[in-house]
Image (cartoon, rainbow, N blue to C red; front, side):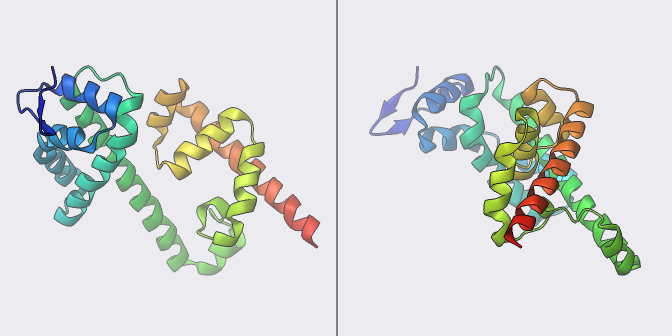
Length: 198
């Protein structure tokens, strides 16, 4: 059982007890005790993938924040194994995002004219344009449920294909298809809104 005395948590509490206590109470002190047991492991895994101490430390902080939302949603039987998977997926997602950004930058450096003409990944959802947020949010709501959920998880929750596939019970191929179709429908919706303004 969770033992508390003057708000303190016993070091004898098992991971499973702390997971259950946090899922029930949302008490950050409980999560802090649980996470402190594995921070060195999270850092080690992150450093292995990131190969950069600062980025690994950032990962430790970001993953802690991610756990606040994720733990209550999950059925966790072995916290350390589950956390290892979460950490690995987070790192792979960050590396994928960095690689994608570098590839886009390199293509632009090689031929900026071609980059602009081809419209390479210039979809509004890929750009940070605050004035587009309201229209984009409205268009996202109009999407079919699977497309909407894939777009939301990929762009707003920064989840990778296999995470989304697992969450929605879909194949990665299907997730990619929903993202592609969703982006196409978003573009059509935004173009339609732009036409109405004229």
